[in-house]
Length: 629
Image 1 (cartoon, one colour):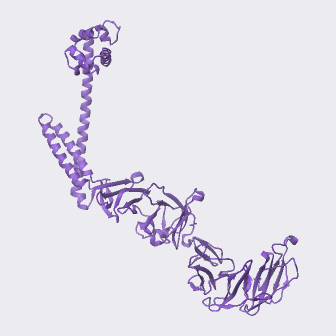
Image 2 (cartoon, rainbow, N blue to C red; image 1 turned 90 degrees about the horizontal axis):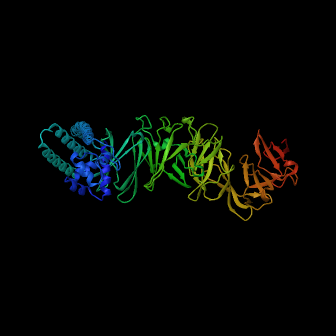
Image 3 (spheres, rainbow, N blue to C red; image 1 turned 90 degrees about the vertical axis):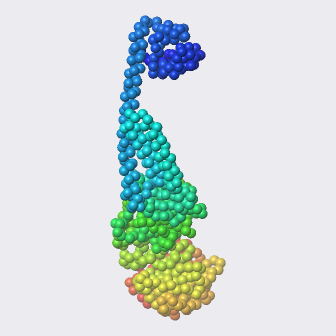
């Protein structure tokens, strides 16, 4: 017989007859709890009650025992009742056995918990506390105490189960101990808010305790078993409100918060090394080169580390962080500040290996750039775009021989060796005007002009960039030519003023002491006004007496060439060919001990496919002979 089916049948009959369990119990002179047990299949009515139950619901005993209306199969009542009772007894037996198992497991778990936590508490008080360790979370010891109390009560109750009066005493002791434990918890366990964060794979644990009243924060290190740690450092600023943590690598965690004055603050906790643990490295120097994100197109983030510091370009915003604005943490992280406010965190990723000789990140190492904010920010991975095949001769830029490259406002030059020289000065956009004629790079003399605070300067070196000298020019004019015959004697063509069209007004200047002092020379071109020429004019001297002056006309349709024999005071026009076609002269070049002059057709010429004439001189331009092209 199915007791549960019988119970459900009784329940349905009762409801169909609009009766409660209490109504049915009153009719049978029993308790409503007995009716409840029937309906739940936990017990079965006494055999003497079957007829009464059948009469109340106006059914037969057969229908009652079959749990179905209209079912009149003969059932031996006594046997059916015995089966039902036996079934219930079996269920009760199984329930008792299950409860026994559960009780046994609870006792075992309680015993294990009791022993382990007692040992943990003893280890803390007699070992770790003496070594200045604390619990990672201040509420842990009180939680452990409570588990010890509960486990102890369960174990004692099991051991003293034969003594019935022991329950009241155990409960009283448990309540007293719990009250004391809670009192201590409120006295000291809730003073700090404990911030715990784990890195990927739980390889490192960040632990910070923040005082709930003052906001002061202490960083903890050297954790033991994830529950003990030592105070490592009290952070300079207290936090007001939320403390945000962001793992940038498995051993680098950025900590962001606002201090009690509402100012954004940043700290970086580092747990690993990027050198061999013994070397002191400068993280700023390790970043030397150009870095950028990949796959971002025009929205790429760029970072350059050079002698200026660290320059970051992001969302069309370019910010330079000088070295004094970079704060290093360990050997793997930096915080970059603008006006003492943290802007970015740079983390050297785990694939960064440092070359100790050069203190530069080796090839394939990447870095992470993280924008400091209390809002959500995704860290960005940056890759080095500068080749690192030879770190001993590592360079951001590699100019051509006797040439230059400007990167991030820094001018780099190279002579005929592998060494790249960085020219001191600011060559950012707008602070210089360089063309192929107004600078010189040679072993004997290297010279550049540049602007600084609206003043014009010359910067020169006589020892291939080993030392440099800066000279302020009296006239703040545009320099279109710089040429030194040797380290002492040089010439400069400057434009002092311009007029409408292409006219320019200026002078030739000469120095005999390497560029420190200059003497003005009035320009007098044949058939031209004194000191008047065109904006694109150029000059070239062969020696201190002989030189040439080039004058363009009519928007590159024609150009004239003049020669001086008195150091630039007067110039005579050179006319090697009478032609309306070949009328565009160029400055002569020195080739194999001769001067070579090329006369072209200009921008308006297309004769014979743009043909040109070549002439050469062996007497410094006094006479010219037509030569081969």
